[in-house]
Image (cartoon, rainbow, N blue to C red; front, side, top):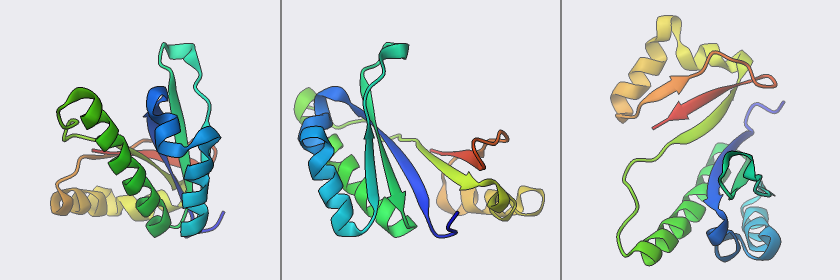
Length: 140
């Protein structure tokens, strides 16, 4: 694994997928290519009763943040236009951290993680389970 590469996931309701990402995700991939990262769109699976697409962005932190912020802004605009009111102010981000780097993020006895939470005001939960060499981290 490359140390400076990460991936972010964004859930997009199916009704917004084409306006947000273009037909079959073409506009989203073009945006990602312009920024220099990769974008994948997972087709909805209706196993849990939801019909949402999952957008996965793979690249450096700056690339992923830029693409995800732009997509999230467009999604917020679409939700606002649909409902007439702004979307909720609370959001969650699922970030995967390489298992071997989790100790650096945590710090001794969780010191570094607590310091990040105190300075940012975010709620951060680094999960214990390992998913294919990475640990899920939920940031709210």
